[in-house]
Image 1 (cartoon, one colour):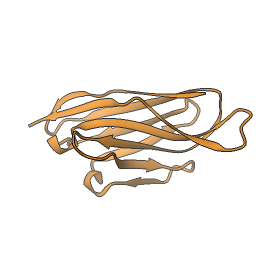
Image 2 (spheres, rainbow, N blue to C red):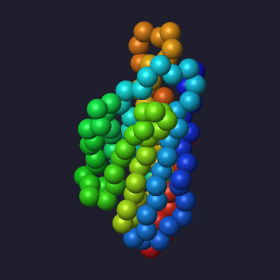
Image 3 (cartoon, rainbow, N blue to C red):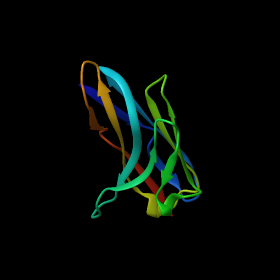
Image 4 (cartoon, rainbow, N blue to C red):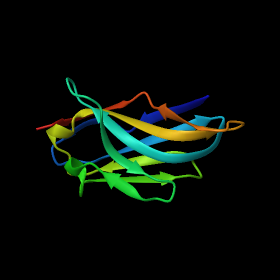
Length: 121
């Protein structure tokens, strides 16, 4: 089994910054695409940023120019640098990753438990 654990969430004022981290652990052979999603109360989960194995990144229009996703394959980690935060960014943030487990023939999608980001106005 594989476990993803997020950290770095918290309460910040509008205009502030946070850096989220996600660590993957377990019986990992390799990790393909990794991404960050968020879900605000009363809304569906949405994609925030996605990063491929080669480092190519895609972002939701609402966060372009403010957020930056990166990964460290040696540490099995993915990060989300969030700048110029606004109240609309308030949500639970989840990391996700497609993982090839040792001894497995296919990759499986895993989710973290989430970390709360709250931006006050």
